[in-house]
Length: 475
Image 1 (cartoon, rainbow, N blue to C red):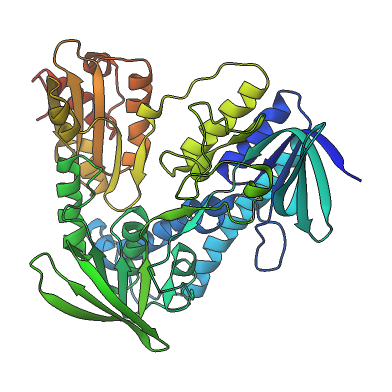
Image 2: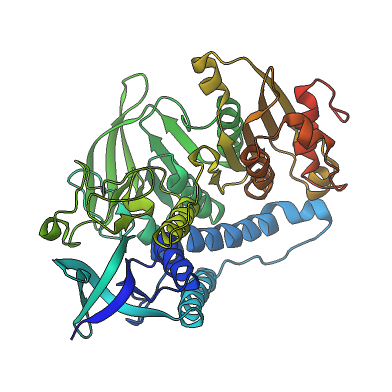
């Protein structure tokens, strides 16, 4: 017998579980269906982000940062370390514990908000009088009927042509988080967020890491100044980043991986690696969704087609997150999930896609929001720029990390902040102030007039704002 709900959410990643909770807060009866399981077969809601993405990668980045600090930098603070030893199983165990705590946290939130959770794979079954029939294939088959459906099925790693992931030698982000020993030589195809973050983790732990990037520019989407500074810093740390690398034949065996490629000068090379991480983008999870059964429209790449409000071509069917257009970011998915729940309830929320921040959690961190300097030049927009280096910031000196800067771009006439770009310590946290000021269409002068605590890294934001008007005080 079918179980009826006002809303069924397919997928419990950041977009899905947040949509379910917000809808429940607004008084709807809500079910959320998710198939992700942990190693014991128990429910593991949270999607890619919690299980094999944002959360475990940050746990490993933190642990590997501690290891490198103890190995190379504690002496600067007068701390002498004897017999430093890496216990990789403990390090990975901590990562798994962090993931599990997040999984359990989501299940607790479902219970707290009276969201009914079903563990299994969901697919559209039919259009019925009461709305939409959804089949759940789990331990027990279920049929759910709901007036509204939100598709939040996320994305998966894109494999290299004719080179499937075996997660032992050829690794996606999933396998790269589960290596049981530090490889001597690690190859990475793709110098994007995943490639840089996971490459940094294993370099810190002792691997010799080579990253092959097909684009001629490093981080083409970032501001050129940020990309240049980050490339210099990461290279000094020991990451070998080859730009303009055209990868050809890749051969995997039980012993390792052989990668043939041409460099930017069209010279042929053959690199041998113990392990290879492939991070060349992600594809939407729409296989098995039953889209064709009910006529849900997908584009040529498999993404669910939606309008600006996340509505699909079907009545009362919505889609959010990685499975739709736009950046594949957890916080973008969350905001879309909230907005859809509120639209279903009759509210009129708004998402400003121009103020969604981007973050790369390497060391130095990189974060930005809004227009880059190259964007503004291309548009022919008249702007002013202010930049302040962390080497002139007292807190950064005390931390022992003075790499990078804050850069603010503002309209030349109105002083409205058009973009903020940060490379340096805790850039991921500092960018929030920029997002707030841009949401309110504030000016660089507004940031410059706000009192920032001393000594803090946030003072670099204030100084960069002052520099827009050529009146920085500490540089």
